[in-house]
Image 1 (cartoon, rainbow, N blue to C red):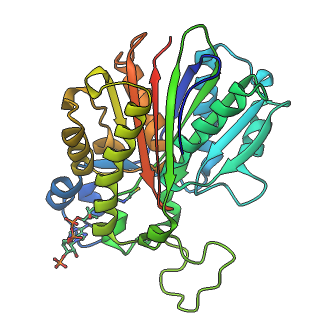
Image 2 (cartoon, protein in one colour):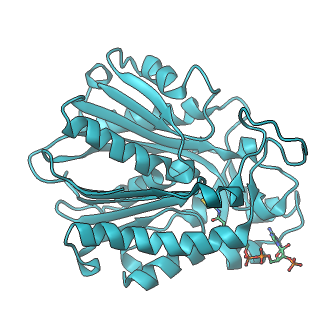
Length: 329
Ligand code: COA
């Protein structure tokens, strides 16, 4: 699916993020599985990640992020009409984390549902919130992306354990005076879904119980997929919006692996200094990745009025998605 924004100007007016306090370094990981700081740094660029405390679930990470986003937008929770929460690790399947979060925030009038699209969940949720506001169904939306992947990792499997971390982010979307979102491109390939899966997590019974309940990944296949779609999706949305890669001021790819991100930036022709990188400090936080990177960019004063911001996510499904927007304060 690809589309150029045709409705009223809609943008992000508030932004927040939260990551748990507990830092897990590569050296500490090397006491848990057979790995080294050198291997992880060289193959992924990840130095450390955050891990949720035993009593913390997704909504505990999402709540401070949501409060920060609402404060940033100067919007009260009761003025939110739509709350979308993109995650593959909700507190539980139901009640949904979005409904729990709406209750915690006091967003009494909000429609709320969770959205499953792997690590691309935040991009899908952004596009859906945009569409509902553009169509006049909602005035303001709170879009949350976050995951507690540490709960669904096999802590004896070095090939997945070292890649992921926990974190969440949130944004407020509403109508503004100037164009914010310019276009979206979203896609999915269920045929490739087998390369990144969580067997035993739903209604399909799997005879061989090995690995059930834990992330299963074919790293090499996902690497090839990721390097391909980060480029094709970004290029597609730029083309549709008649924008050039030279116009991109801030590039925010999914923070999965610095090698994948560098490859995409290089192929697209985006100078590295325009790319936001925080995978070294958080690892891959799935649906939390892009809003955490956005919040980092904002904290570093890298998001200026009128800047062209390109975001591209990819992940389980397999799925991918890009958004192109002009930043509005
Ligand atoms: N520490 C040390 N060695 C490890 C290791 C670890 N944590 N994980 C794997 N290895 C070993 C492998 O067992 C293999 O050993 P062998 O050659 O004796 O069989 C060797 O390192 C090379 O493994 P390989 O899988 O070829 O490494 P790679 O260069 O492809 O890097 C990934 C592995 C996972 C970092 C890389 O494939 C990747 O980033 N894939 C994409 C993952 C991703 O982003 N997923 C989420 C998408 S949302």
